[in-house]
Amino acid sequence: MKIMMLTNTFTPHVGGVARSVERFTAEYRRQGHRVLIVAPVFEGMPEEERDVVRIPAIQRFNGSDFSVVLPVPGFLGTAVERFRPDIIHSHHPFLLGSTAMRLAITHNLPLVFTHHTMYEQYTHYVPGDSETMKKFAVSLATSYANLCNRVIAPSESIREILLERGVTTPVDVVPTGVRLADFRRSSGRGMRLALDIPVDAFVVGHLGRLAPEKNLEFLARSVARFMQNRPRVHFLLVGSGPSLGPVTGIFARHGVGDRLHHVGVLDQPLLAGAYRAMDLFAFASESETQGMVLTEAMAAGVPVVALDAPGVREVVADGINGRLLAGDSGDDFVAALAAIADCGEKELQRLRRGAAATAEKFSLANCARRALDIYEQLEKQDFKEQEREYQQFGRLLRAIKGEWDVVRTIARAAGSVLIPAD
Image 1 (cartoon, rainbow, N blue to C red):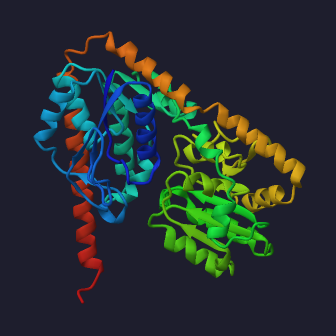
Image 2: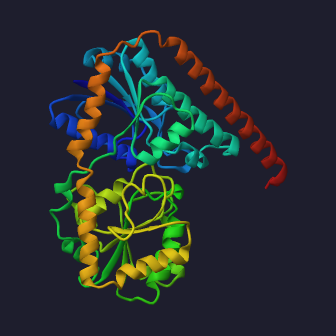
Image 3: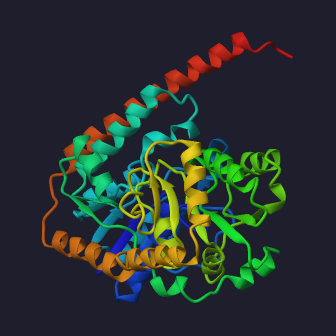
């Protein structure tokens, strides 16, 4: 089968969507299928890539670590003609998502859309962020989903949200799986030695893109408070992003900055080494659609303390593989960290076994097989007469752009009045 993936984020960008696309692509190829990826240009991307078409893009849009694609060049059409895909799989409802829809209509191909992201929680990256823009983000994703032939939700709780929002296209739940063996090869001792973390320290860790929507300042305050009277506890932070500065400042103000160990983006086998260096994984994001880093941590045998949220509750079972906390109380988060740190080796081993057992349910091979079954079902159908629906979606995109322009104009006008010329 020939599968064409279009995504606004891909390596070397760090984030759940990029990792999901990369992981599924590798597994599809391992199983004998061909995959062509269409993605923006990113700083530091590999010079040579197998079956990847890069689209020119604006880097670090509005202070984020995202790229925003420019108008799609003509050579993409040539690449599509040469590849002759059987399936078009879109990973976003905008930018290259629109390109995916045009390609599906032009070539009479099925269009699959994975709803990776709760887009309304990312509008702070858009100039003129407003409640109206959040509503438009929900409307855009819902309308796009209803123009696709199949929608994939990474977790059951996201599927339920999509149905509540009015998605009528069939929605299947397919999480991004984990290559379990990748996370069981390291002891973690080498990572601790490299970062000057004592071998006998209790290490709380976090890994991911360091951005505001991940609720990292709450996490940092909770972990730093937990560490204050526990000199044996260290915190290992893996990743990069705009929230690194605020997080570092919080640890410094709590007097535990010397026990914060930060490393940037890691690839295997160092990634597994980082997880294996942790005794406990801390997670406070409420914007997830699936708990990819949670399943990775558990594949390494690391229990988790997390806030209850969509995409998280499917992975973290309270008292089985960690703690799942209702609400967003910092006191409760600190208490949960302390309870596991003080529980004793026998109880900690029980939680580790529970984590490893949970990870078994998220095998990459099994998840990829479920997605391939969806592709195979769609291959047998005909997808003509989709042009009219696409035109309706185009009108929605223009409406969103109009709202953005109005809000941005008002913001600029207010700024010129309120901010004195200097």
